[in-house]
Image 1 (spheres, helix red, strand yellow):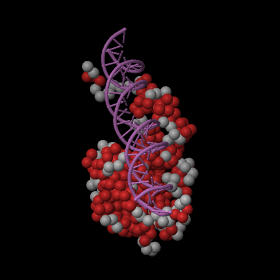
Image 2 (cartoon, protein in one colour):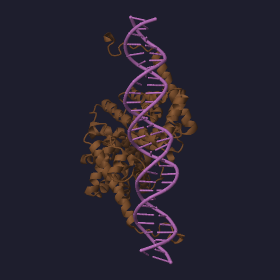
Image 3 (cartoon, chains in turn orange, purple, cyan, brown):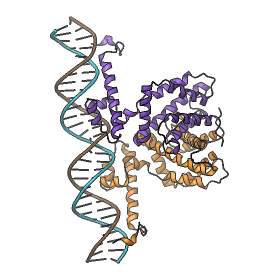
Image 4 (cartoon, chains in turn brown, red, cyan, green):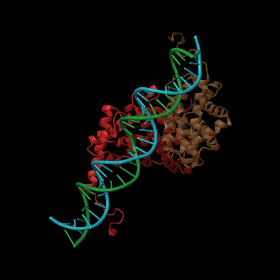
Length: 207
Length: 207
DNA sequence: CACACTTTTGGTAGTGACTCTCATTTAGGT
DNA sequence: ACCTAAATGAGAGTCACTACCAAAAGTGTG
């Protein structure tokens, strides 16, 4: 009987875990490379699996859908943590601006490359863009909760939601490639633009 | 030769057009009914086609994807027109609030039912929600153009984009079912909430 | 009404993402 | 070496969607 093991109480991080992490990374890297070489739509899961030397079945065990190879990253989590680290005195939008800056600073150059690469795909491939939008919206929702705690209001306080929502919308608007504004894809100055826009928002967005 | 016909110059609205419109409506109605009865995911295109008495091929001739049966509506267009009808003196966000109100007023009771039904699906079915979000974002982008013209600024003026973005985000935030705020699905007071939120935004969203 | 002409339709045969199931392998601990 | 649990691979199947072609139906003309 396996009674004593309880619920994963004892799982040390052994060879197994390391191997899984490697496989996962391998799949993602090969996928991104193939997407770069032959476009997203032009690449089949079968090809990715073959390149990463796993079976298609295994691919789907690591990523629930083809889209998730691009979308899954932990940036949201970092952003969230960075926000909680901001001094309580800071006004909501200032805190968010600072948190974005801090979170970006934690990226290694390697991560930065991957980040930009998936950002590019998130803009150019419609299916991915939609889902990225959905997840962004969800993240900002969580951010609203954190914001509410900061300023000591109820989590569903409308004013707090409105601020979070405004931030969300501004990010979307300034980032998405529908306007000439964002024509440079997701370069460095995408973030500068986001920051400028948030500054405007902070100033009270009078026209 | 069909020279004299020019480019649809002469196309009177004959039996053909009427039949197409009927088929299209039939497909959508049967689809929405089946979605209601057996959920969206639980309904196959084949079933919809059978119910509407057309072949699956024909289904895809009328709607590019299964999602589009839910998404295709012309509300965006009406909202857009309503915005252009607002008096030029009105401040941007006031104009948008008024436009939303006016556009909703143009819906017939029948349209209102369908509108709410697809809104519900847009909230509950992830794939549809993502796409709805994407289209909403796109619409607001167009709205920003209109806004820019209203206030006589360049179409890519950052301040204008920020305002449009803020409106977009607020609508998303207050509408989407991630928070208890929106727990009632897309009821009447979803629109009341949107209006309240926009009012807050208009007031300058200081906390 | 019969005649060409065009549009609309149905059917068939794919492709590709994803699911389920089951037998085989492989790591972890005894 | 031995047992257990997790990870993998392989096969069959579903479903959205595409490409293609042949049958049918609407439309204007003599």
